[in-house]
Image (cartoon, rainbow, N blue to C red; front, side):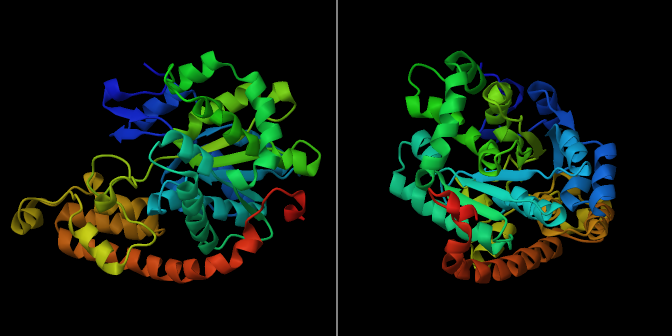
Length: 384
């Protein structure tokens, strides 16, 4: 059994597959990460004056060395942010979670963000895809990144195959130190695995060290990402100091739930996933079919109340579409008391999502004209 396979316990979490109802506390124990506790949240608020709702609600719930990042920052040393996306299709709203949080971090701490679009990864791990496919999706995904309003002077988006001249020397340093035994143990590779997939972690590690190369000094790097991506960076951290760099720190988010209540949101399940390109009628149809915590009948729900804790409609609101804690809790309380039924609750979510997407899609349409402000290719001059 591969190290990060949890299928025997009812769920599976790997960088390429997430299935079942995830026990996030068990992932902390199995992956060897630390909980993002109240003390760290208080420190963030002391430093920047506020905490993001994804921190308050423990959506970002786990970390590696985030306390060290704050220690350095308080002593005057800035860090860089690094996150990414594997472009296998259009962006869905679950993908936006760490991006929205990364924008907040960039705004609050005034730091640069390096955003990796891994067209090579999706080509290697999906035999039905071509490089043209994955590169095209990378450009589509870049529109969503730009539409979120990142600072163009501090945001550097790169597609791996367009940026490989910069990444490859760093990847070679990592690849020379990684051995197949460790990579196999972490990812469950076997003799049928293509050699490109075996080497890929070295490519994903490279941006951890890119800021240090560009600045000519060791720069701490913080990676906000889904907990499913942690295995890559465990390997990165194992070799970082041996090749002369700092270990990257991480902040892990829980994964956005599916509308059918059975696992995480996935592009491979389009009927239970909201995409940034969806039209209002698409959103309405998907929310209408969403799994809820309601009762069999309206009269029974008024009498006994519903269960917002298992409701995908409430989860969508909790994870992404309502930053006001009081509003989220008010709707949950009204559900439990039977004061609001599933129909009106769904309509509230539809309104929130469609309002967000209407604004996002207008910005997305203009994003292609701004590629030159954000996308960098094989030349350091792009960063100056």
